[in-house]
Length: 603
Image 1 (tube, one colour):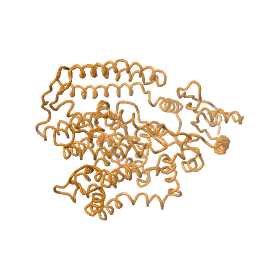
Image 2: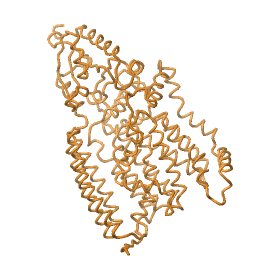
Image 3: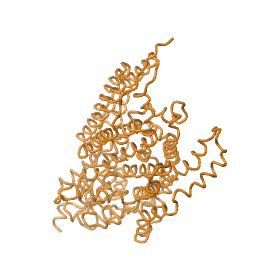
Image 4: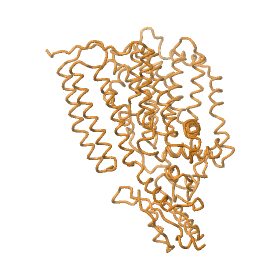
């Protein structure tokens, strides 16, 4: 007979008020630390920051702009929040306005509030102790750590998605203040649409439709007291009357609808642009290829780190006898997660950050599983437990160097940060495994989370010191500063949307050679540019060069080479920034001048 190891119940979470304060303090430290450290703003972050900056400089807040181009592809909640953040935390005399700290602060606060909502929802479903574990799984997850430090809209979207689903649960599970909770649900649903429409129609509306009309009726199958699937479905349909649907939809529309209507009447071809941005993006009309259907499975595991291995049991937990008493709450979270993953997997255009608003569902699912693993009384086979710990430790020791090989080959500029994070990961895994084997499960759980926080801090700082993730943008900005480009001298981005990082860090607007609508309606997809558009771009360059004005152009190397093969116009190549692929010019950028300094001076 195998030797059994018996674990007593761990003391974790006693005073709800104190416990929540500790949780929020830790979440605040994780979310708010290092907003000015780490890598510079990415291109997508800089779009938000630059358009917020232009609002502060006098642009129309109702229709944000990036340079002189209206940015209406997505709703403006992110820009509005960053503008308010800058007004609140930036010095009054900052020029240009909107610092990196102000740009990222709304996401950090959204992550903090999301962790609080995860706790509230977990407590409502499973009680205080397990709700606290859900909150910890949220606060220390890779999803929250990274996207709390990103100025992209995803963390704000996650907050209002989580708020909408939390208030719906509270409003439909009985108890006091039902009408208040449902009112807050519709309001948060509308605000989520202002963050990133039309995605919440699926990630909130679709989730709840599946929950109400599919999950709830099916969950009663096999129950002897059940009246049958058909009658359960009829009861759910009748139950819609209790959701305050008509007044709720009015609240939803009053919050969300004014902005798209305003844009529709103010911006020509806005409807066509939205059709291209949303319908063609989803169907594949803007892509030359699509990632695999299972693309989001490893992404989900990465977002749940350091609890990735427990995610398998967490997804199965609604159907396990050990979690029978918590089944309804687990099914709600499972529906939330699966509808997200399922819908996004059918899209031709896939990106990791699209799944962020499902991360709180992962934390809710993980709560009971982690509580049972680290805190609840249970008996385990000592031999199997020892084997599992050693497999995990050896997997980390072997896996981190293997991962380092691929990082060194494909992304050598972030190798230093990978070494720092990998070292902390190995040390944490081995130490936590040893503590668990010795029966100190609570210490193992606490050490695991502490190491994740420290590891993130060290890795984030290393990325910032290396300037690795924005090296091309930094190089071009540094060169333009060195050239002392005056405000009268235009800077143009050729073929495609200007990299917003240049505008944000240079502190001035950069114009595209083609407007977004011109590109969207004439490009076959996001990677292939029609020959006719390339030819027209070359003609526009020739006309601009013939003007005799000193201008600067950022152009991709392959397009620059093809243009030079068909033109004898004098060009001054000022800088070439390599994208990292030795066998291709596709990612290389070239900074060129449209006239010589001497000629410009003589004029």
